[in-house]
Image 1 (cartoon, rainbow, N blue to C red):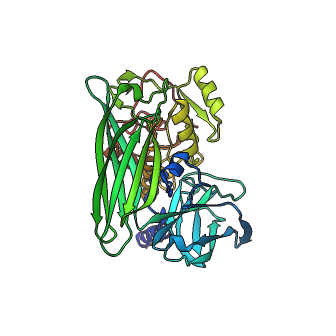
Image 2: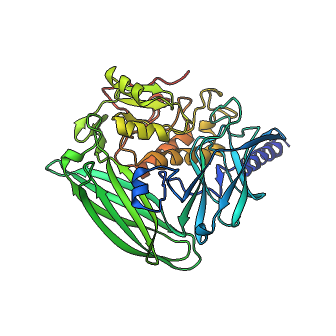
Image 3: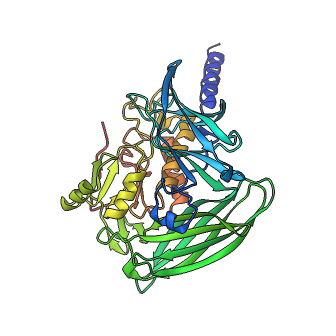
Amino acid sequence: MRTILTVLLLLFASNICAQTLPSHNTELPRRPIKPYATVEEALASSDVASRYITPLDEWSITEKDGSTIFSTTYSYPAAWLNRQLLLRVESASAPYSVLVNGSKIGNTTNNAAISEFNVTKKSKQGLNELQVIIAGENPTTPLLATAGKASLGKVAILSQPTIRVRDIDNNTRLNDSGDAIAEFNIVVKTDALNPKSARIEYELFAPDTTRLTYGYKDITLEMRGEDTVSFATVVPAKWLWSIHNPTLLNLVVRNKVEGRYAENIAVPIGLREVKYGDKRLYVNGKLAPLRVATVDVAIPAEEVVELKIQGYNAVMAAAGTAAEALYSRCDSVGVYVVPQAAIDTSHGAPHIKRNGNPSNNPMWKDFYLARTGEMYHSSKAHPSVVAFSLGGGATNGINLYESYLMLKALESCRPIIYIGAGGEWNNDVIEGGTLPTTKK
């Protein structure tokens, strides 16, 4: 009887966990992509200037059944017909669901990460109703304790063509002369049910507007397919990014569909080589011990500069804070960043036995992997990001081992650290610098 009862309890717990997934109907994580109608608008990088971006900043707020409902409307103009509509939510105070015109689109439990939802099918031409429902009870509190009034970060509607640029990534290695061999990957996706073709054009510009390379590739994707347009070029050493000379280039990508430019995208690019070995970190071939300061995610640029003067060369924000603006700020100022996955279980049970810390509970594995992957894919393209953290300090366990192995499969150059590892193998020790100590 006792054995049967134990099995029933385990099945009941498994069903509860199965009903709460890390996310549902969200787009794959990526670097923030902003589509524009012209190259000039893309280079200016202003949301207001883009006819393909509608910021949503006027909300009515109501309470129902313990949840907080943020409501607003958005327009689906005739010029956007035959294009995809993506809702981008930068952050929220707790897990949330998205509804359009009363129909549920999807949800996410990683409220600290940028999430995107394809709302095309549920949108109609003209005015549409949008609701973001923030849960009153947070099922993921064991992973990251949150408190305070319900809030919503920046939200916008993006319009991209049916065959669209989904993501842009780049890698850098130095040749024998110290110049950069830059490799770029432009991920192209289609949401169409029939084959779609596009011409992907690219140009790379130095800060003085010198065009360093250019080219194009014609691509055809099958139903709901995805492929990558790749190219490489050699860039002189003087244009390398470093904390002493944070040089940013401009990569312009133009998506031409049926003879017309359907979107123009410009992203800042910092080229630098990062290597880790023998417990040492190297940037552009030079030893780079990290001296990390813990900062608020909203720290202004002048305070980041002040930290450099004080001898810090890297920053780390609290686990679970939406840090895209911080990454961009440090790209420009010249400070390293160590992003953290939205995991900090130091407030929970310290032991790893049953009902102990979730880091050692296999039922939470998918949540750990999802949060770690979202942190990685949203931050990996920033030149300031030279290492990754599995989260805030707490008890080690199987889920953090799995998260470490997943990142190692994705990332061959930059170290993966976990300050709560307690000497175990899922922490790449970086000698010569200082990291924040784990919470107790």
